[in-house]
Image (tube, rainbow, N blue to C red):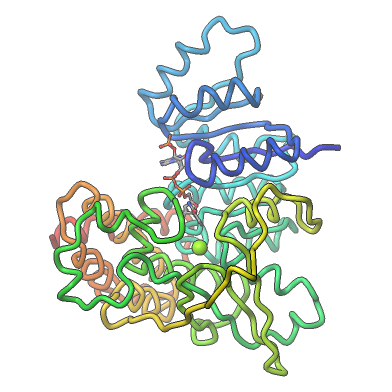
Amino acid sequence: MPKTITLLGSTGSIGTQSLDVARMQGYRVLGLAANRRLDVLLPQIAEFHPRYVAVVDPAACEQLEAELAGQPDAPVLLKGAEGLVQLAAMEGADVVLNAVVGIAGLDASLATIESGHDLALANKESLVTGGHLVTDAVQRHGVHLLPVDSEHSAIFQCLQDAHSAKTLEKILLTASGGPFYGMTTDQLRGKTRADALKHPNWSMGAKITIDSATLMNKGLELIEAVWLFGLPEDKIQIVVQRESIIHSAVQFADHSIIAQLGVPDMRIPIQYALTWPERLPSPVPELDFTALTHLSIGTADEETFRCLAACKKAIRKGGLGPCAANGANEEAVALFLQDKIGFLDIGRLVEGVVDSDSFGGDYTLADVHECDRMARAWVRAHL
Ligand code: NDP
Ligand code: MG
């Protein structure tokens, strides 16, 4: 039987690559969700014939409703942020892939798990902002949480041998270093949106591309790894691997290290999350070892890239610390993309929020959203 998937964030970079995988594997699509880009969503509806479509943006919703009116086989339209959550919980999918960007994906991740579905997770912000809510729900409902993020997929792949996994001692989380690797604070000062949007190895959505330039992405991924693999922050070492060939590695009790390698193409981790525990043929080209002249390794400069330092502080504080760091970053990146703040302001604002409170203790979903709102307000008040 072919799998049936629901895909949240279908119009984005991960979303469209997920549909490449679905096309190749002959998967059925139960539901698609996007925010507003109907020019991308409409052809997806025509090709994959989902039973449900969720659109969050109200104007786009209205426009799609008009486009679909009178079509006999039109999908059911689910509206707004509530529609996204309804779609995540809809019966009939074998797995829900969440490729929404930002904390906007959190409620849908929880709805997926609470309705008993396996969750293939690209939306790292779900784990960063609501890590204990997500992991508790996974335990309670006995579903699988399958990482899509390339580094976390690599670590997950390295841990498939359960005997070795029990002796996991350390994670080597690789980072490309982004477009500004090796630069000083002075060199970063004048960097523009156009400079920051040029990633050396990956073509991704705008927000994560900026996060890669500030190293916030690696900070978010460190927090994501803490929640996914249960090691403390100081057992996760960040290693710069400029070519993005080594996607991460794990070290066991005997100090043996196992790494996962491949060309930088997200369709490998996306497909593995959807086919796990099986492996199936992929359209991704093989890694040509004869053309690999060298693999460069380096360290991440936390003194210069303050977002990474701030994320480490945030996870050490615990509680809502990571949520506050994430909210500040989402707000600051949006402002940077509108040319309203400079590149270095992002790190200053994220670190400022993390330093502004202790953030400790247990939290509810309502607390997470309140903390996110407060972090964004703090950023706007400290421009
Ligand atoms: P994109 O910006 O390319 O796509 C984001 C998707 O989310 C789009 O479908 C967008 O819809 C939708 N969306 C945006 N805002 C909302 C909202 N408020 N409610 C519902 N849907 C919304 O991002 P990426 O695909 O690059 O990244 C998606 C996630 O995957 C992020 O969490 C990122 O960190 C993670 N990730 C991405 C990688 C990559 O290679 N791109 C690698 C590893 C992880 P619309 O298009 O209509 O605006
Ligand atoms: Mg990644």
